[in-house]
Image 1: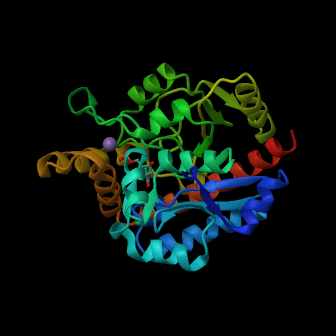
Image 2: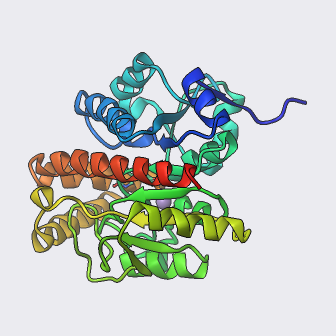
Length: 305
Ligand code: PSU
Ligand code: MN
């Protein structure tokens, strides 16, 4: 029997072998998170951002049933162009996609799994999944949270979107023992906005200090991930009150239409984009770039330990 295998580009494999910093990137954000061609341009710009801050980017996906770390430009373009036609793959979907030798866009959860298998500890994205509003009834809780509980990868994000119940998401992470760090902030950002009304567990000032916390956690054998929340740059942040209104309209329409399960997040993301007349797309792109930069700096500091 063959053991689980991640196919890497030479660049990623060599960087990992020689202990150089590597940053994992997800592919659901490409296929399901943004429209073409902005998604393609974003994916390339994010890779460039990681490189220019001294680390090697490894965009993660499943192609023809093979777990992959590091994609070619044309593979990224194909994921960007096919968009929603590419299956969104979280932990539970991996076996079916691999067995059927299909393509899959990886979420935070499945990107963490593949990153860990490849030996990558640092991962940059936009926002994590979480506990959905109304989860007391629907039990819609993203598999991202369970993955953070068990997989040793740090996720640099802009917090969680307020399409989610941020308070319950933080409670869940606390129960699962996942540290939530704020980069130069004591407030958890809410993706489009720098504020959410909720506190992080620790405000950490430098990439170096974040790397020390990661090392302390994993050296002690405390398994699981860490959430590193990096607020969107001020000049791109959107108005908190306005976003709350947009999100409550999007949620009302979702409930009316009976949209649930894995379709819920992509529906809400699309609706928010529509209701903010595309303004949210620019914010989304800028915050991902900002996260890629911090992730590269953390990866560089972590690799030097
Ligand atoms: N939040 C965003 N943009 C995204 C996602 C979440 O602001 O693109 C994607 C990520 O891939 C995340 C996934 O892991 O949605 C969570 O989906 P679900 O809630 O179905 O677990
Ligand atoms: Mn869900």
